[in-house]
Image 1: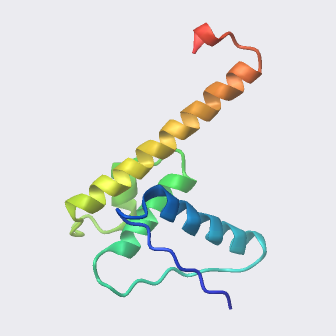
Image 2 (image 1 turned 180 degrees about the vertical axis):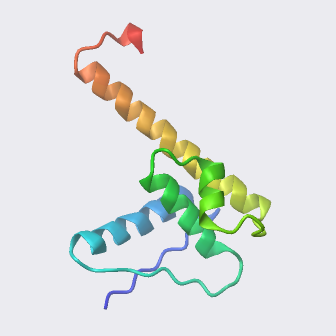
Length: 113
């Protein structure tokens, strides 16, 4: 079985998350599976789960991803909350830009954006 390893955090940022998501999607698309295991007890698994939710579901913002990834009384560190919220905002911004580009490519005058 293939072993995936990526630990997105403040040092790897979006690149670390995207590497993990890319590896997971590639495994799923080829009929494989993956399991993300973290045994540090620092909430990293919840953090990765929250980021993946924001990445895969356009309707999930940072706070919603945090709530969906862990129990309401989970002890999120402020740095983890900021990281997940930052990732979710970056994803939303990218999606808006892609949508705007598609409208321009379809012929909508730039002044209407």
